[in-house]
Length: 150
Image 1 (spheres, rainbow, N blue to C red):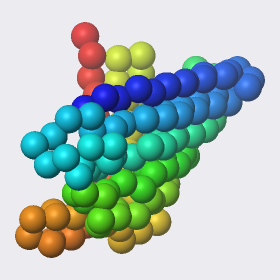
Image 2 (spheres, helix red, strand yellow):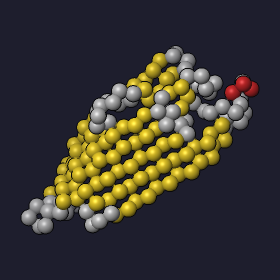
Image 3 (cartoon, one colour):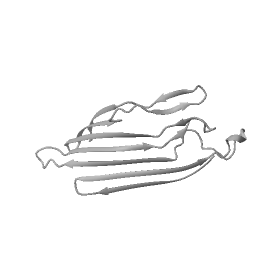
Image 4 (tube, one colour):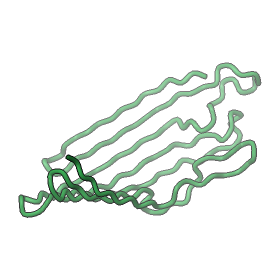
């Protein structure tokens, strides 16, 4: 197998309160050798050609009376791929949105909540080409965290 690619990431502070992060990956993957010569030149299974993400966050400063509150929202693209090395069963691309909120209670204490798959999109994350079974990706997930550092 031969994989060549490009990965880019940019982080920009649009202001002292607004940040933007974006990333992009391009993978040119190809099967170069295999015991089955019909697979040579195909794309390896479950390897998308394109992946991308973007994230904005906005911080409301607490100004000493209370802690900073940060709100974030972003999206992720996973391009289409194949469920098998024969490239006969396509796995569709998907775009998912996420959100987060973080409250910095003190310098060493923070409370946060993260939501992945914010819109609760039902999507196929992979297909088992041998059993012809589709596996769905995670539905909306909420994770709350209380972080204390010392």
